[in-house]
Image (cartoon, rainbow, N blue to C red; front, side, top):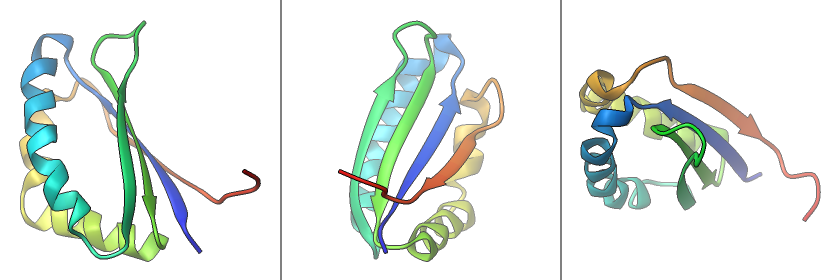
Length: 97
């Protein structure tokens, strides 16, 4: 069953533009991963730097394999200096559409 993944990155506002460039460059790799369906990236109008990703994956295990790959390749370490707090991850099942 497909899963929707919510990821929130609290980014230092003064580092946001640089982070956004890094993220844009990384999305093509994300789209190429097994089980990937869709992704959208949003920035909070009222909290500069608060960046939210809504992702769709064929399964939670596909997403977890992707996240493990991102960890192994050092991407999460690269993101670290841009963060002003801990990332938030949440997993959602579809109820209605």
